[in-house]
Structure formats: structure tokens, C-alpha cells
Image (cartoon, rainbow, N blue to C red; front, top):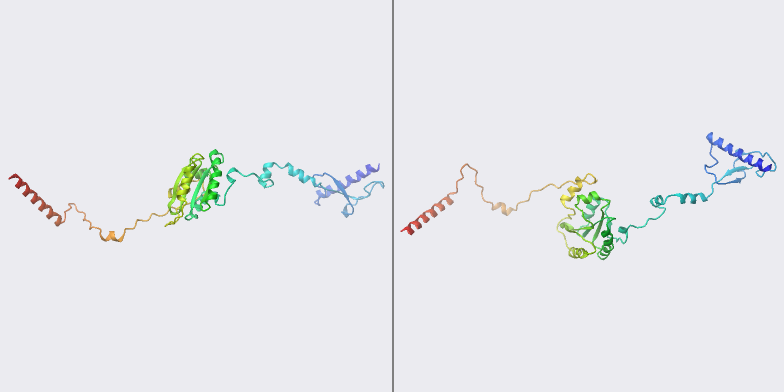
Length: 294
């Protein structure tokens, strides 16, 4: 009988807290209840008289608490993909992210590619066009990382074809793996496609264009037609203003020695000097013919 009265006393306290919640008071009972415990003299407004002297509650307040183990259970119920996106679980490195050297950089946009080429100065820049699903690109990547390690003065730029298809199309890159070499004021010095079987082509280009040299003009970067193709591509947030065409200056020596122009008339007459010389030549020719005829 005492146990029944004790349980009744507990439910009266729960109903009272629910009514307080509906009237705008603070909620004392959480939505999900996994256990409860007793606390003495914690809420003075919730004094419940004991209906039975033999009850275990003895007029004490009832407060329900949530178990700490719920957080672990909830964490285990989060999908693995969501945990990777939020950083709860570290994702594995992709193959083009392994072995990357300090002088290797993945291009994020067309503007990033243009700026990286212009800021390189006289350095040799190798642009590597790859695709995550390209087997040849994946097999060649470790060797490219070795070349980058052996040539710290060379800048390597990686362009992901899957993420920048529209940009690669504007740059006329249709074969993978594909490489383009840029150097100072010369701009693009060579471009080719190679695999592990033809890696000598990459080695020769690297050895030819790596030696130190001084450019006399500003860094060129991409060609004018490539910049125009990128700016006209509606899929790319890239803007470029073409440079105004300046007339070619004529040296001063050529201007002073230029012959006088002949005035335009309906009948152009030759100068007297030319006319007299031509008449003398005709007379001499006639005399020679007469002499031969005799």
C-alpha cells in the first residue's frame, strides 16, 4: 500500500510541472526521460504532502535527470558522411594531395591561375592539368612530386579538370595528363602531354627551361587570346579588359630619309632627270642599231 501511495505522489508532482509549463512557467521535466533521482529542498514551490507516512518519498520533490550516456548514443547515430563533413572524423587524403611539396599549389579559379602566373616573375611555372579519374595522372603524380622536391625554385600549379571543366575548355585542354610551361616575359614556352612511358619529355623540358635567366620585359602569363576566351566564358567569374593597340613607333632616321611623295595627278609625269636619262639611252640604242645595220 505504501508503494502505491508513493507512486501516486510522484505522478502528482509530474502533473503539476506539466501544468506550470503550459501556463508559461519553466519546464522542469525534459522531453526524453531516461531516469530520475530525488533532490531535497531544491524547489520550495513544489512541496507535496505525503499521503502515507510509510512512503519512501516523505514529501520530497521529484526531479528527473537525463543520463550522460545519451550523448554517446546520439553521436553514434550520426551518419559517417555527416561526421566527415563536420570534421568529427578526419577524411583520408586524396591521391593528388599526397606528397605535395611547398612549391606545389592547387588552382582554385581562373583568376587564381592568372594571378599565380603573373606573380611568379622570372620563375619557371609548370601547370599540371589532371583529373581524379585519370589513371595516367594518378600514376604520374608521385614523379611530379619528386621533380618538385628536386627543383624548389620551380612553381607547380595543379588544375583539377573535373572542378574546372569550363576553364580547361577555354584554354583548349582536351588531353590528360597535360602540362604547360611558362617563363617570365616569354610567356608559354612549351606545352605537351606525357605519361610514365614518355616521362623523358617532361625531364627534357624541365632541364631546358629551368636555368636562371633575366627577362627584359614584364611577366606575360597567359596569352591574349586565352585571356579573352576566359573573359567571354559565362560560366567563369573572370573579367579582362583588352589592352589598347598602340601604333608601332617609326624611328627618327627612317623619317628623315623618306623620299618625297609624288603628288597624285591624273597623269603622272616623271622628274626631268629621269626623262633626260631615258632619252639619252634611246639615242644611244638607235645609234648602235644603225652601226650594226651598216
